[in-house]
Length: 54
Image (cartoon, rainbow, N blue to C red; front, side, top):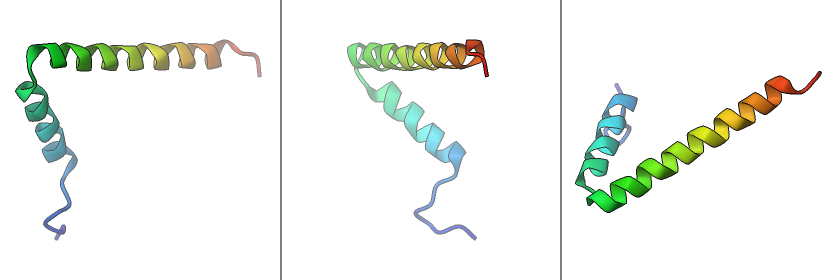
């Protein structure tokens, strides 16, 4: 059995969603903008590694 303080991935995800929904709209926009920038940076990084000759 898991220790009481150890959360499953699903439970942790639900906590993150709840925290996001409790944010004021302007803070939610900042979070979404940040996540979008991270995703774009990762895409650029992955594209760069695929294009480089090995």
